Amino acid sequence: MVPGDMPEFESSLLMARTEFAKLPDAASKHMIIISDGDPADPNYGINGGIAGLMKQGVKISTVAIGAHGAAGHARLQTIALKTGGKYYVVSDAKTLPRIYQKKPAASLGPWSMNGPRLQPANQVSA
Image (cartoon, rainbow, N blue to C red):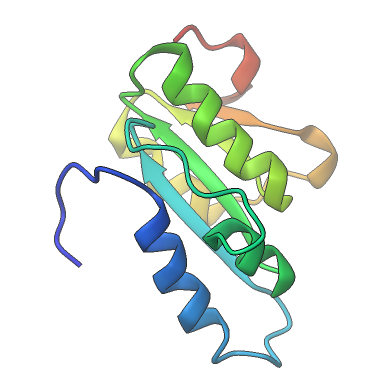
């Protein structure tokens, strides 16, 4: 995979679906997408990457960093909500490791990492 500006999410989701299929006995399956939300929407249809990952029990958390307005945030929120993952908004890339180091309680919902404290994502301006 080559870093850069992805034109769409679907090809990466299909690649992940193929790899997760090789792990049928995994106790937990979780994928994290870090994006500005700019790529085109994934295919939410029955043959799309999201549906395939959901059938395999994969939760997808999304991290918005440098999102392009409300559309970018909405796209990433939708992916997380549809798959049972979490949605994060990060304003400083240095806070990214905290997503991996600390798991917010499931009942807390979407969270944003701005500075030293966690804040609900719905309190972050786009």
